[in-house]
Length: 215
Length: 215
Image (cartoon, rainbow over all chains, first blue to last red; front, side):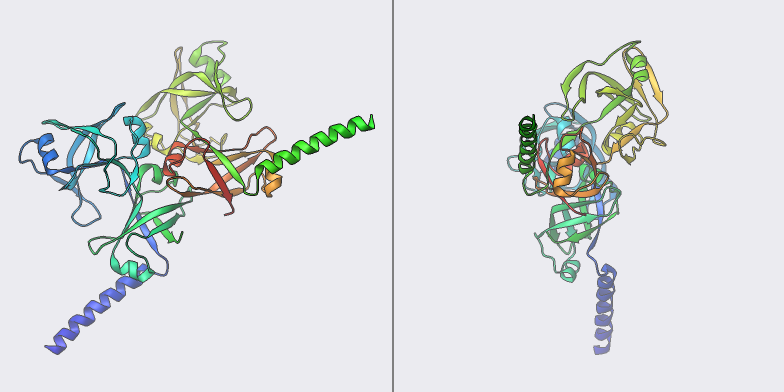
């Protein structure tokens, strides 16, 4: 028994050490670029697609359990609309639309730069699906740029949940993003999320690497 | 005569000193945000709008002699188009389309990040006006971010024509742009040009101030 346990412990320690070593000396972070998308509550999903409807997974996202659905909706603002806006699953407690500031000009609304979930007081919009429409009184944000970070990475580089850092990207249009929120969870895979405006301002594509530098 | 000349010299020196003092201790630069636009050659202008046509000024731009024309054109790429793209005057030696990287996705072409005028080898596109169309074999860029700088400002802060600097902006999405080209000319008014992607990535609006920091 003891020798069995010891083998297990050694295996786990060895895996942790291997993972830490794979982080290297520099706090590098792969970047994921988010296009406009919507998260739906179960209630809104059923209004838009019909009673009892469930999302169909099209593609897994990098964060465990998150996926792009096959379904899309039309998003309508005071001045314009987007057809075929991707729904990300699974359903959430509250419906949330995430757009870039550029998208906001097309829709005719001003999405504040906010952390996901903090939608109180944001502008309203309309969603239209094959079975119905919902008019939301609030719920649109330009996502605050952030890093999904597993705890061992955070510990390795002395970073903390909710800390704000700067990230430098040596892309064709070299850039430093200040005010990048760190979110630490053992449910996360290491990934920095930027929107399309931010990615294009830096000439950045998916899986390009950013480097965390302190503010 | 001598006293007259002395009066003139004193006046000029006093004005220069006043202007230098107005620059302050920090190399601050007001920002101008450029939406997609086109510069036309005289030849292309006449194909699009008719023989002998001349542009009508709508609004002076900050750089002396430059203006937004009342006229617009349709820009057509392999995958999409933009109607009502503003023409900037006066006419130039060569036609040049300036778009953001986001615009490139809509048009279905990849505009390289280039200095104005360096259009060789860039993708082609079609322009359509009220009297005709032109198919350009090249001429579209995503403008390299740059600062128009008068010589006295450059001298005051020890900056040089063609130097690359970084610019920090303390906007709602604080950011540092690296690889910003300085262009010095006595024809210029101090102004940093960003495109819409870059401005939105930083939550930056017209006349916001950037601060030059060395690379």
